Image (cartoon, rainbow, N blue to C red; front, side, top):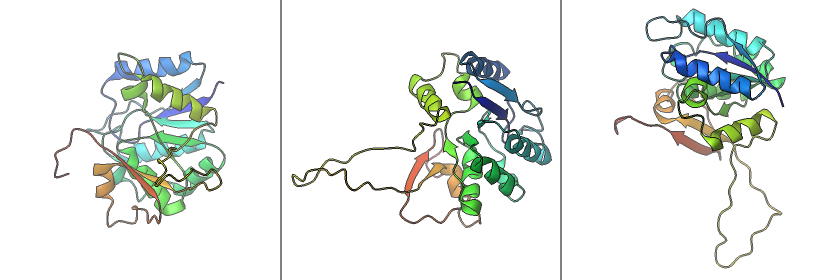
Length: 214
């Protein structure tokens, strides 16, 4: 089913433009309408535009009416602008069905939004690093993303083995808030208003290529 996907750059500048183009073409090949933000390829130092440019891109994504707002890449930059993100506008877009998807630096956006409004976002792929990979997207990632687009996305699900010979029961289904993201970014939010206070949640973490002290 064709969906409207809005692509924007809230963090680092897109360096691998070939990967970016491959990612866009692969999404279009699935029949999706892909709308690229006017500043998606902007460059200001290491960022995809200065702070004001990236804030404006987030605002345009929220106002686009798209089914999904997808980042071009991670990197760095969102912690610089957390105090100015239009949280109410983003939350309203989510309430109307938009899904904000990303990972890595996007963890800052996700947890700040969760702390401020409780709105749900999704940990998922980016355009360049995932859909634009030279060898093609990972099959499982792509299938999960399509499930999300079609309203079948799950946070996660698993079953633990029964203890002491007990018989598993389906009558009791435990639910918890799934939260977290990139470990380095999450740690940088500690002690700030943008770190969520979660009781009885399930924390997930991802990181790669960092020194152990991080």
